[in-house]
Amino acid sequence: MAYKDYYDVLGVSRGASEADIKSAYRRLAKQYHPDKNAGDEKAAERFKEIGEAYAVLSDPEKRQVFDQFGHTGQVPPGYGGPGAGGGFQGGDFSGFDPGQFSDFFQGLFGQTGRRGGAGQGFPGGAQVNLEDLLGGGGMGGGRRFVQNVEGELQVTLAEAFSGSDEVINVDGKRLSLRVPAGTRDGARLRLAGQGPGGGDVLLTIRVLEDARFELDGDHLTTSVDVPAPVAALGGDVTVQTLGGKGNLSVPPGSSGGRRMRLRGQGWPKKDGTRGDLYVRLNVTVPAALSDEQKDLYRRLRDLG
Picture (cartoon, rainbow, N blue to C red):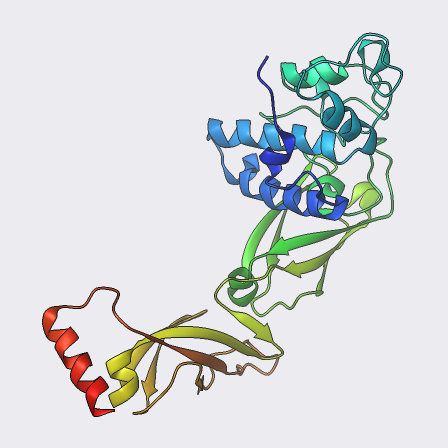
């Protein structure tokens, strides 16, 4: 029975907050969901492992047991806390069937005593409730029907810029939706009549931070590397934009940190126009210089 580090599975620290754990789970579950990885057995197994880790770390009692006894793989006989008596008595497994979890999980928690209806099981016809994958309320393990279901849908900055097609599962029902181009963080999407009992599915869009671009209002900010000779003498450099590539004319004598603007390369506006893209110049010097280059730089230094 191999030890499983559930923190490592979700990529979070042992001191991670509930919000950090839920955010990591949503991101990974979306990435490895069977609907997006049809026929990929490795992705299906990863999805199952992610669900198991979340079932433990999202529940304070199960997390306590894992932190205390996880290294042994089994709760000691006579332990009076959660898991006593060979099975975990209580706990919400969020629609997952713990009987399909790993031997390591069974050693700690057993298969009995979960609240709510029968587990949905996964992978292979896996269904994850909107509450589990998207963070909405109103659809717990009890599978009760409600008028409306609310949740959050995370998209990348590029997906929000260009628009994206998404697939979610609500109460075992697969729903397709389109995130419109130019969607902002906090925007609301409504799927009328698609929820349990004919209710609505209400989604709040959460746009993830991007390593390359920053969004501020209608404008984007990025950076571009500029070779030292181009910064000194002027010239053109290619800038990656969210819509493709743009050309930036660097004036002679430009220094690192200078901020320039590409008009109309920013965020889409409601009137059909776009904001601007601001570009920070990052002046670079080759890591390895030829003898000729070294000689030229020495001459420049001596002239300065």
